Image (tube, rainbow over all chains, first blue to last red; front, top):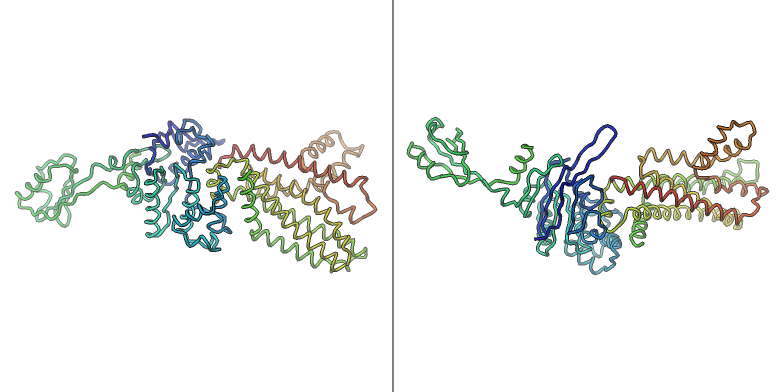
Length: 303
Length: 261
């Protein structure tokens, strides 16, 4: 599949008199066309700087990058992409439709029917014919306007910065459904977010950036492989199992009994049989799938 | 050109709703309305004092509006991140800057236009001297060029100077450019002035915009002071303004193009 975004050793260094600060360091990103890609990282990791470079708002210090096959800085790319910033601000005196007219005019688009369709699509059908200005909109409505303006030029690639940040659960779900709809339409979506549970639900692949360096990148299913199984055995204590060896596993005493924490795929039956042979009673067997949060914390801490 | 016009229109819409500008405008209009009361304080002809006062109010408040309007324009767009949404569209940085400038100048024109209408009505209605009121429009035209020039200086500086510094810097340039030229002129004509001082005065007066060219209060207050060819004078002043504005905007565009936003 062709790459929607490809960067090679992309670096951004801010130079000042006293020191040079490398915010993004030799970034190698690969985002395939038609996928939802999650770009994760703690605050100050370099996410926004990366997005600004990809949008050609700032220039990279070194390295190269391609958006939809065109080199970074190619002005024509701007006709094919869109961006919704975190906590977007729009000219407050404008109505929803006026916002779309304004952004439309930057593309030379003046089709009001198209704009009204977009308002309807993002769930702002009521805003089409009202004089309600943007400062009277809720946070969720402003986010929807952001998505509507981002769809004006029928983009192939959308950059969404914290698209669900600060929204209530219902708005969360609605925005999530819209984003999933973009993938159905064949668009590529690049999401920068802290909302790991959200990313886990909708992204095909992710990259985790920390201190400007990519610490993990790949398919979510691959990255999250390697879960654990927890077996709780009552009526015994850890000492009984002192001679038992489990590869990559741990045995802990808990108030409810002995807890076996073993890798997914271990011989669980053998552990259960061994525990029962020693008079133990199996209380529970809980498979623990690896979560994005675990991966994120692991990746960021290891760095 | 469409993006430039769209950005200019949005800028006007925002500027004419900015509370701080509306307060300045309100005070200016209020002062214009109470101006006739001040005539009785002077022994000179009432209308002469009134003319000077009215022109002074319009010029001073326009300068404050022009500076306040433009120094925060670009920094606000960066702080609120609207600039990122706009620059991610097919909009060049120079188009953004020119759009913002044209929007600022248009908003300034609207506000100055309102003050002009109030002052013309004041002369026409209260003093039954419509001719005098209308004659002020020429002065306002010159003021408008002056303020457009001032706005271009502020917007140019805003590409590399913090807003507060820009406010005082642009204000300082305006004061020197308005009042300093007479000083530089007399300094240069004085045979006792040191050569180094003369050279310095020449350099400063060559770099800074000559805002004094647009101050037409004196001929209006003192009709005996005449300009030989007022039309040529006005054309020269406007051309000088346009030329200087272009220089400021080109410098601004070059700086803004390299700016890390």
